[in-house]
Image 1 (cartoon, chains in turn orange, brown):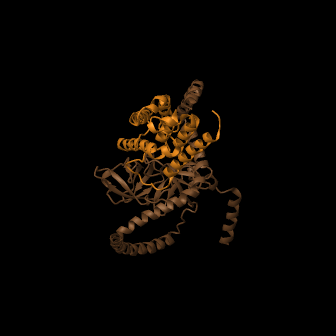
Image 2 (cartoon, chains in turn cyan, blue):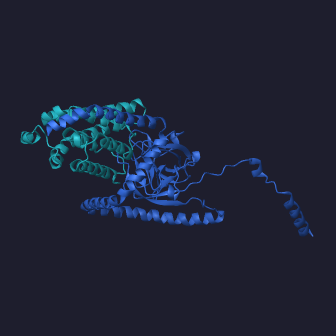
Image 3 (cartoon, rainbow over the protein chains, first blue to last red):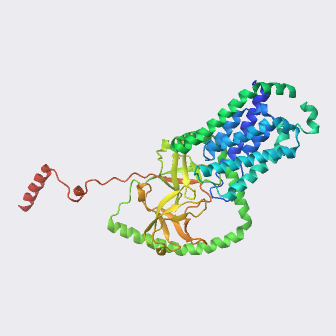
Length: 175
Length: 304
């Protein structure tokens, strides 16, 4: 992979969005315990990016961001990052087909990967006798994380130039 | 373009796959190491946070301030209602103030009689809350004081009124406070009129549960809860809150500290209590021989 200017600017953009996400999550606004979670936008963002522009997001960068997220957000370090990376790789391996498929199919695959990540995370927490969040809280986190995916596709995707290659409008540009 | 990327993809794919496997294995290895030897990895985590969060604080402070202003603005809508509530509370508070003044005078007189010396080593460092835990499942805040201010793990932290939590994780410029409401928080307490000892156990709600209570019949809702010095971790006698009883009949504590807005926190410097050795010496101090002679001489002079 060559380090030309568009590649570098995409890296910087990804870094900027990630630090924005961490920034918002770390703001000292919620010091009271709550029953629900706002979800984790980092996983859907990385998935959407890896499906559309895999050549502009190196694995090492995504892995670093996941790991930093584990450290900053007080999760067991490495576990969620490893699972999220597996999910992203699963989608990336099917990127070529999913890019030709419709948006519904793409979302279904991404949602399946996200659900698998969270289920595996919870199972491993139980298996290693670590305290897991309550079922309702974990379910709300999962739902919000799933909702972020279409939001990233619809709102930020076109603005970033993350074109959907299956769109008839972009078919010519992609070929 | 598509053809180009596809050729480069086939070229890079085996290498990329190996790299991906290595990355996943590394991440899971970190998790396993953390599960086995958590203090070392937690120190690493604090070091990373110490590097990452303080540079963000200059941007966080104004954003937090703006959002707080917006929240305050929302509360203007209910201002009439609030005003009435406040007036009613003020009436009650005046009665309490009168009682407090009398008690203060009485207390001062009694202390004077006793010549009590309050512990001069119980001083505090005040820190500003930099960030929260970022997750609704973990209740902790990050303070802007750390090892350079002499903070040590395990010190008690309070806001102006009551206990908030304890220091767990210290880096150079920052330290983390585990709040009483966190799942991992356990604090030894005394319930006041009956003097019973128990453990306050956080369960991710605003009112932690009282566990290991010896005789629940002696405890009533409304009793004062203070920290006890058990285990020599905490200074004793810091106000924690009041006992309440939930619908599930378990005793909980309504915390005295205001957890809604944690802004400035006091970290109490606590020294380890000096151990008492040789209890015999304590009762009968052995004076050195020289002093004995001198006192004898003084005694003679006095008698003459």
